[in-house]
Image (cartoon, rainbow, N blue to C red; front, top):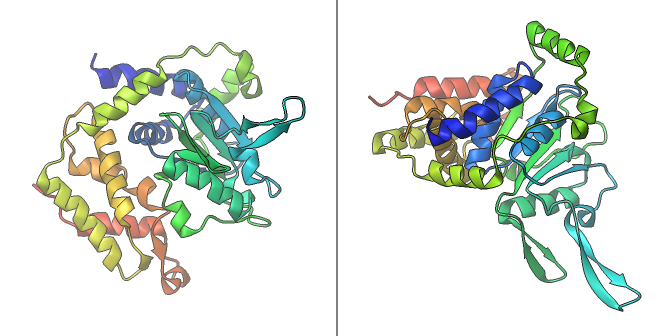
Length: 316
C-alpha cells in the first residue's frame, strides 16, 4: 500500500463510520488538512460539524481545543494573557486555547471583529504576540471555524479580506435518508456523540505522519499547460460580468496547493485539470463576490463557478 493510501484510506473509513453519509465532505476536509489550510464549516445545527472535527483530531492523535465564540469573548480569551502571581511577584503566561494543533472555533460569526481579527492573525502568521513577546504556534496548527447560515441576528459576518484567509468553505448538508437511518441504527447500538471521550476511537495516524504527508504533497508535479489552465481560470474570474471581486493571488496559490493535495490523495504524482476542477467550489465559494445587480437577478456563486469551468478549455 502506498504512503498516501496508508494514511488517507484508514482516516476516510474511520470518519465515515461515525460521520455517516458525508464522504464528499470528508474528502474535502482531508484535502484541506494536507494543504495546511484553515476551513469554514457552514451548516445548520445538528449536522455533525463539531463531531467531525473532534473525531478527526482523535484519529490523528492531535491536541484539540474547542472555543465557543460569543459576543463577550475577548482576544485574550483565545490568545492568552500574562497573569501576575502575588506570591512570586512575577508575571507568568497563561496560554489560551489557540496554543493547540487542532482548534475548533464554533460560530465564528457570533464574536466581534476584534476577537475575529486576533484569531485570524494567529491563523495567517502561525504565531501570537503577547505584551511584545512573539510565541510560535505548533507546526500543525489547523483551525476549523463553524457558522450557522440561517441565524444572522446579533452576528458579525467575516469581511471579505478575512474570508480569503480560509482555504476552504465547506457546506454541510443534511444526509440522505439511508445515511440518516444508519445514524439511528448506530444510536440504537449505543453510539453517543456527547460521550465521545469515553468511546474507544482507535487512532489510525499521527501528527508526524500528517506533517510528512504535507511535505509529500509539495512534491506533486504540475505541468506548464495545467498551470496555465489554472491561471486562465483565475483571470476569467476577474473578468466575469457577474463578479465584483474575482480570485485573488492568494486564492491562486491556494488553488495550486489544494489541486496537488487532491492529486496526492488520488495516488498520483502529477496534477490533472480534473484535480483543479474538483477543488474549485470549496475554494472559490467564499472568495467570489457577486455584483449587486447579479444578486438582484438571483445569480448564485456556484453558478458562476460552474460557468467559469465550462468557459475555459481544458488542456490536452
